[in-house]
Length: 370
Image (cartoon, rainbow, N blue to C red):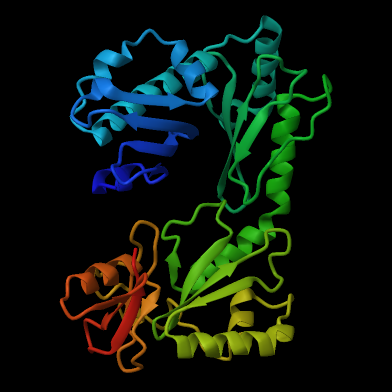
């Protein structure tokens, strides 16, 4: 399988050694389509035969595009598939636009407008031309902004609206036919925001005290933080929004000897977690150590960046491969250390593992093939 095909279409699998038959899936926007591709002459796109599932055929049947003319200009199999994906993407966006432009009935439109007026226009961020997509907000007592998007169906109020929000969990409005309004949904959303104030208080406490490595710009919907514990060790703290002061789920990353110690301490001291104390105080009690804080350490002193690319986050990945030499303990992104190792002639490969040396101290290291 050539590099372009494996890179751009990883879900499409060759069925023979000649690479003339493929089967699998194409992911386009938020949709996934099953397709099969047969190639007659690889240099002649006219001999390519691409078939798909019913949903894909139905989507393309509603357009007036001359696909053969566009695809016939392709210069390779991967180029052919890229052009096809571009055409399907345009069809999907056109279909979505048509759906968005469905005009509400006069009764529904009047209901939407009156509900927004009841909610207060200052809490409305956006209403599309058809009044079937509403973006609303609520600013809580601490000044945090919380958002909810409401999609009003054409069959409203018989059919319930769909919602997504900045709450740390999924939100589905309770709906009784004909007995609920947009104002009811907004009030219910605001009520949930108020109940979750202790949760956001705990997250603010973590952000204000510890060095947070990920996410760098937390959203109100984020219920986790990765913090530095020093010695190139980090911990992911996953807080339960419904029980924010309870013992969170903790996962440690870093040199194995430190990680093993923290895991043992957590198991030994879990019962010492006190819901009446702050999460920061509890963390230090359970882990029996002073966790680096913004008041006592600088980001440079933490030294948690990848030793190759000198960044912490790389395509949302953190440095999880660590040199076992206690005098070094340099962390690396998995992809960075892999690229480093495969550039060396002395590296050995055993199945899907590379065996080489640390770029800093020459300590033997291994990493998975990525």
